[in-house]
Image 1 (spheres, helix red, strand yellow):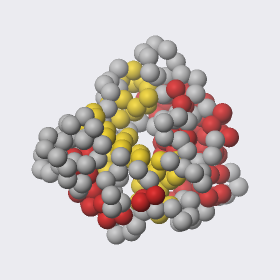
Image 2: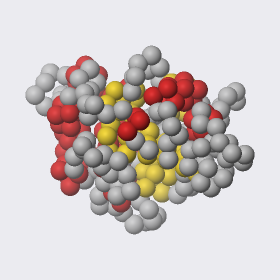
Image 3: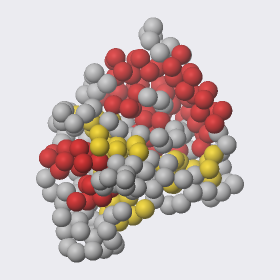
Length: 267
């Protein structure tokens, strides 16, 4: 599982969807497991090389990618980021092979860039391919790289946001970077956030944040205003504690990069 990421109140005013989005951000049904899914979206809107973003939900292997912004499809994009809990050979509720097959079915041409911000995306299980390698194989390319996708990236260990420089705290989400295998002293913060996610009531409802997400937000995923409001409410409620959390992270290694551009095969 990846660790939650952090936001600042400044991000409250950043749009989650945009008519001219240049990046497709894929989330899975584990978006409702904790606050990290919503904060990944806010983090993405603050990245200059990917923003603005258009969010897609993938519930399971039987359903299509559902856009939050109506009328969009994966074929409208060349740059992708995948934000989900994961493990060796798995992203969200899908195996590496299931995700790759599903992605190829809806994205006909090879994408230019796909960044996986989920744990162990670049680490193969005992049997089968890593998530990164499975997707690369769906778009065969020249020798060595063996894929037409220009750039893929993923973590070989747990993926988490941390300050770009050890010992120098961040003050806003856009300053944070995803690393693989970071060290953290923020376990108590994580425990508190998870407790509140499962016990605190979502404003204006009788449901907890988690239940509201599962029973209201996900079923109406294509309602821009509902989704945006939910993400911003999480930011407002938990943002300060997430800043504290991200600043407890240090060490680790940069994400593994592969693909046609570097002529490197994916692990």
